[in-house]
Length: 228
Image (tube, rainbow, N blue to C red; front, side, top):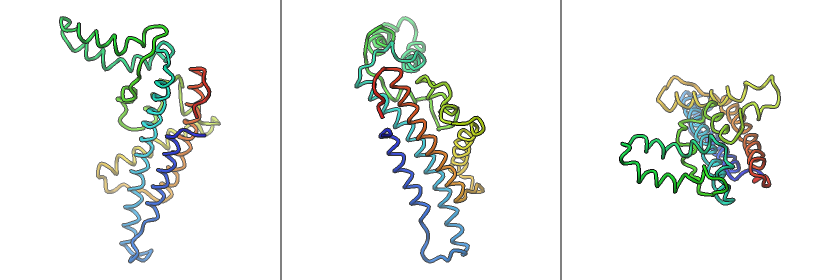
């Protein structure tokens, strides 16, 4: 059973497919108006698909954090880089203040973040802290996110053969770049039906395999059954 987040992503892909079926009933298939509508629809599909991919990453992150909070995972069991990232907002705020004013902030830091650095202590993780840095689901950002969970290179993990190893990140990068150009008003950017099908297939394959890899990694890290 996949994560709730991945199931939601699959439902979102149906929306992208449904958008591709839209057409104007008064236009013939070869009419100039029909071609313009088809072009606009394909461009909209690309933007929508990229948004759904991004939402999957945020959703699965929320799902993971909710699980760890429910299990009351000890802070010292979390990967060190994840703990540092979660504490960064608090430590940056302290660093920006004059040291004479640190007392209250240090007290809050110990209360909110101290459990990360105490053996056997539990606390509450904030999912927003983990992805506050991510702007778009580019390959380097995806590698960085999964690395916080101890997966060194998510693309290598989800790719079965060496010959196809470059394909997933290139496809994700192509989708995000195309989405950016369209969203930023570049009217010259084209997107065909085959482009949409290709990017949908690659995005689905990545999310499906990454979903499974993350589940296995969580079970290994915290010695509980695979969450999905």
